[in-house]
Image (cartoon, rainbow, N blue to C red; front, side, top):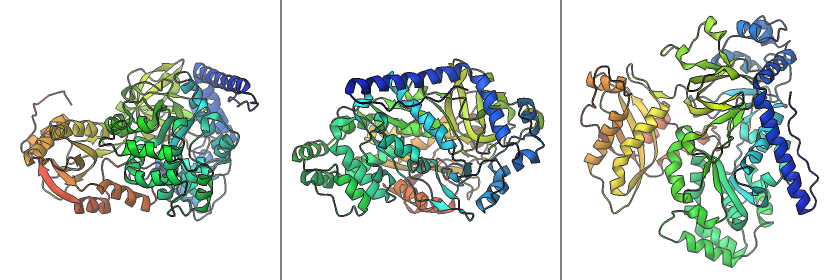
Amino acid sequence: MPEAPKQDQSMETNDEHNDAISKNNKKALEYIEDVTINADEIQERVLGEILSVSADAEYLQRHGLDGRTDRKSFKKMLPVVCYEDLKMDIDRIANGDTSPILCSKPISEFLTSSGTSGGERKLMPTIEQELERRSLLYSLLMPVMDQFVPNLHKGKGMYFLFTKSEAKTPGGLLARPVLTSYYKSSHFHNTIQENNPYTNYTSPIETILCLDSYQSMYSQILCGLYQNEQVLRVGAVFASGFIRAIKFLEKHWNTLCKEIRTGILDDKITDSNVRVSVMKILKPNPKLAAFIEFECKKESWKGIISRLWPNTKYVDVIVTGTMSQYIPILDYYTNGLPLVCTMYASSECYFGLNLNPLCEPSEVCYTIIPTMAYFEFLPLNKIDGNDDSISSTEQQHLLDLVDVELGQEYELVVTTYAGLYRYRVGDILHVAGFKNKAPQFNFICRKNVVLSIDSDKTDEVELQNAVKEGSNHLLNYNASLTEYTSCADTSTIPGHYVLYWEITMNEKNSIPDSVFEECCFTVEESLNSVYRQGRKTESIGPLEIKVVENGTFDKVMDFALSQGASINQYKTPRCVKYDPIIELLNTKTISSFFSPKCPNWVPGHKNW
């Protein structure tokens, strides 16, 4: 198997420093080339390694694999599973059973899923060696980026990164988000301590590790502002997190300027480690404070990122899937800087990276790195309607990595080194192309994030597009949709879709009720044929838009965080089913509107 690229740390003079970076980058690109050329052979070896190392694991013995490591036996003997199928085994491990249940290597911790995907925090087992695989994928990102934006090692990255408090299972294992695990790992600390030029962040590690979200955000923005001219790239995990940082700056820039002017840190920053680390950076700089104040006082914040951080080359955030709704507001704040999605990963496994990072957000595709795990793909047409189960024959014929077809859509299935075998991740992917033998995928959506009243099924992408069309009516009134979610309200007969909208608008303007009714109707017109037929036959009631107070979705996020969600992984849920959240949204509703008429529907119409 191709050896992972090793970082050359022998960097002394500037020339030697640059040469070593070029050498390391070349190694990384050669590695990508090698593993994508030999994708199938590597996948076969990866599966063999996983099955041989864990041959005595109870799960594999239970399914009769009996030490076999070949693909045919694997596909015949092991079922395709979802989380519920593994829950009893995972609970045993969480409760302290240290026998080799899922894999032979000891489970080092559990990685918690987002908590907003499917509504349940899932525990994903991991082993110590997985950190090396994650670190490998991270090490490939900047060598790829350097081909498009060179000399990034000569400046800093301003990234808003956060950790979350940890929980322990009854058996004593840590349970925490994957990014918290990584930021607290020796791998992450070593890349910073070894002066890796690509992890030269404006935020001291103490500010990233601070569990108080206010102190962490405040200190990271302060350090980013103070080092503004050194910043060449900015980012966060999700686009929503980056927007949250901008909104935080909008609220606190006055105090931040005062601290930069005086070199004295606000008393609200009480974390001693944060204070010490920030004060190593912060010195009185009246000139910089005046510049920031001048820019922030302007009536328009258009281009504020490129104004305050003038050397910024791009914004590194996830804007695929439902995050695409933030693209217009990101463009506004950044003056159209490139929006870069670098990698594709989850709590279950790290998957791949974007080899064309400066592409348009709508064209982002991720190349699967074959050494990360063993990958299989379930064609969407194999799933019958609402039934997610697949036959044993179909389970034996999931496609391997190199066998997927261009233009087709699949559900991702992974087998990991940490004890997940043929596990359905729930991501729907579209094959956009190939890098040598390795496929490149567009991320479409998370499976089963839908609205449904009758026989209709509205997925996340369709809802996003319909909301976008409907909200266009607000533009004529200098208003815009800043956040939204939905629910299926079956308390009425017939049931109906409810959209909760938070709107930004000029206080001097007033939007007529008829405009919101037109928004409702346009959303309905943009939904699929089954929905429109249901409206026509009165099995679905008129769509309702509830306008909520500004700041409502911040309260929704605060509630999710209080329930254990991770600030790094948090995404506004596009469909809510949890009664306390629906109740919160309803208490913040200031007005509601219904679609005034049925959308058009013609039998046999194919324009879904």
